[in-house]
Image 1 (tube, rainbow, N blue to C red):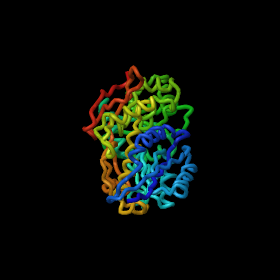
Image 2 (spheres, rainbow, N blue to C red):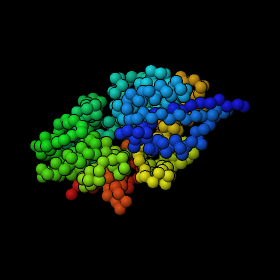
Image 3 (cartoon, one colour):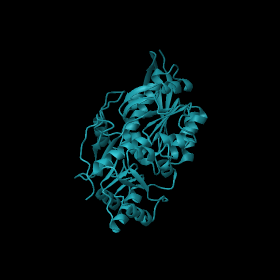
Image 4 (spheres, rainbow, N blue to C red):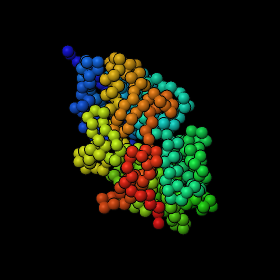
Amino acid sequence: MSSTSLCIGVVAPLTGRLAPLGAPLSYVLRALGPRLAHVRNGGRPYDVNVAVRDSRSDPGAARQAVRDLVDVDAAHIVLTMAGTRVLPAVTDACEATEVPCVSTTFPWQAYVHTRGADPGHRFRWTYHFAWGLDDIATVFADLWEGIDGRRAIGCLWNDDLQGGLLRHDRHGFTPAASERGHTLVDLGAYREPAGDFHAQVGRMREHGADLVTSAATATDLALFHRQAREAGLRPRLITCSRWLTYPHTHNTPAPDVHGELADARVATLVYWSPDHPYRSSLDGTTCAELARAYQHATGSPWLQPLGLAHALLETAHQALAVAADPTDRASVAQAIAGTTLDTIAGTLVWTRGPTPNIALLPLVGGQWHPGPRGPRLAIVSNAAHPGVPLTGDLTPAR
């Protein structure tokens, strides 16, 4: 029986500020190349081509990449990992060109809000798997309570989209944290990159907040921590949802920034690690095996997005394998909408919500601990996912 060719399109940040996301995605594309080359649907074989276009970490370039994948490469499905401005550019372009898209890497509320929609809106072509801002707040509350019970938490949030979502009184970080009995003190919005945090440090002193939560860049977080120390304040714990995946790679700021933050004992969310109890639906690879293979092939430490990148490709393969007609984009989109799939990043269920087009991943709490080979991300809180073993103790700054 002759085979028909299908195409998986990938918009990847191969260059620009989001390139650290492109590195694990590029690796997974190479490693899974043989597995992705063919798919069998209803007993019929199909050849599969993978076409990769560089978003250049820019929304305009990302939109053009989608158009090229559709018009030039004839992609039947598009995959992407990106930031809060580039990812919506990809998904909106996919919605406009009527090609199914699966994305990942940031909270689902941000995914919905940045596209001008409200929770409950149903997109026809675009699907996303991740976690929620409320899930981050819950994990961070576990970490705060592991240090000092319920108390005032200083919130270091920027004046951009990210800070606005965290402050949102219904869909953001604040409601879930407040429900746990914590008092959130907004230290004052700031513009990135920041030049001075003395006003925020002053509010921290005024409210007696010695626990801080943030979504700052590594450079801004280090500046805040240094100025707090210079003012005689020492945060006992900083939880940060952004400085989480690349603090020890060549893509990140200078060593003095890392030294400052290592001393701060930053804690963060963890959505994937070598210790997670999952396997690939494609070949049974475990999380630990994937992390080791990545380190061996690249010479770089594993990164959390590695598991997400692998799950993206598992999802695309599954959709093409079960769609009523894998050559029809609408049929592929319908297949994604009904998918439940055990992946190396966890079980993805698009039929359950929390809102249409979204599959949730659970979170655990981690903390960067110093080690002989550089910082090590230890799992220090697993209340939301006991299946992930603890690999360290939560340690406050001294």
